[in-house]
Structure formats: structure tokens, C-alpha cells
Image (cartoon, rainbow, N blue to C red; front, top):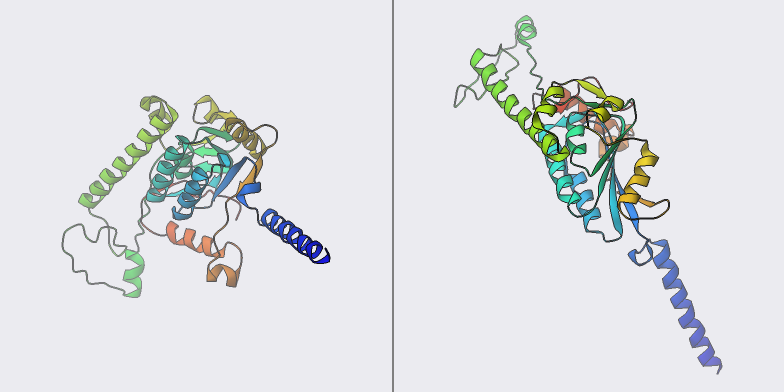
Length: 291
């Protein structure tokens, strides 16, 4: 009897230990229905982590809706378009709500427009629908210091944007055509995603900044509300009752630079590099989250 009692006690102990371990590890078995949260902050220079997070939450049957918190002035064209497409794909499976912070402009608005519903504060800076490219001209400086380059190229436009010389009229015309085409993609996608006439979008798609209060009147957003309102809205659209449980996407590991010199230093360096490059940008110059 003593042996049986010991064995029974051992089995009960193992079962209890296993249950406690599962609970503490956040096993899916014990997770209730919830809202998945993804943050998009700073200049948008890449899309991989956001695409991974969207896909994960989309496939998770316990996540009933997704909240994207945006505090960004926009960024590079390619990543903005990639995230836009993934949000469009996701809303066909479950609701996606966007909560705008201090700024959600240009490429950030591009992404937001794909959501099921958009909330912003009255003073949120949004809009800025347009495309921009910065091409530095350092010809004067190079002449002063005696710096020269020899360019060997395969075609007349291969060195377009060379900072050591003035752009030719033909090069400017070619770049303008590219920018116009990319701009038309922006307008077309916002028009379709927001179910607005393209002509109405074009009226305000001249790069202007629009505050949240005015964006609501223009139907660029759906509701005035803060982060907490957005959580409740995401829960409501996902069919959850009461205050929803929020699961935040896991952050990727910091780079060595970030670990060495702290915080968001590596992100700031990337932003600086992007601002000084000549890539096409859906970005509001001079604005962004708190430094």
C-alpha cells in the first residue's frame, strides 16, 4: 500500500508540474481568444519582420483580430507596398485595425489604408500621399577639394543620380516618369482599399499633411480614437466580449550596434542612411516619432 501511495503521489506530482509548466510557458492550450498587436515605428526601410508577424497572427486560430499600431512618417516604396499587400491578404481572413499615433503619413498611410478600420487622434499627422526622391548634388564641393571620378557605363542612364555632376534634362524626365508611375500606384491602391473614387483621392494626394480630424471628413480614416479605443474596436470586430487580451508580436533581437550604443541607435543610423540616399520614398520629410 505504501508503494502504491508513493507511486500515486509521484504521478500526481508529475501531472501538476506539467500543467504548471504549460501554463507558465503560455501554451496555446490555455490561451483564450485575443487580439494580436504589431508595431510599425520609425522610417519604413524593410518589411520582413512585419510580414512574418502578420502571417503568424493570420494563421493563429486563437487570434481573432489584429491591431497595427503605426507611428511612422513612411519610408521606402518597396517595403510599404509589400506590407500593404500582406494587410490586404490578411483582412480576407480576419479583421485588421490600425491605430495611428503622432504620425502615420505617406508610406505609413499606404499601409494603413489596407486595414479593415483606421483610428487616429484628432491631431495625428497623416496623408502626405506622394512620392519623393532626394538626389544630392556635391559638384561644387568636389570641385573645391579636387575630387573627381571616372565613370565607365553601359548606357546613358546607368550613372543617373551621380552626385558629382548636374543631372541632364533627359535624366530628370526619366526620373519624373518613374515617380509619376509610382505615385499612380499609390493613389490607385488607396482608392481601391478605401473604396473611394480615385478622383477624390487625387484631390488631396498632392503631398499635403492632413490631421486626423480632417482625414475623417475626407474618409481617409474611419474613426477618431486613441490606442485603447483601437484595442476595443479590434476586439469587437473579432467577436470578443469585454476587454480583449492583447498579444504583442515578439521583437527581433537588436543588432550589435544597437547593443553597443544603445536603444534605437541602429534604427536611427538606418534612417539617416535612407534620408541621404536616392531611393524612391513614400515619406514625409522632417517628421517622425519622438527622437
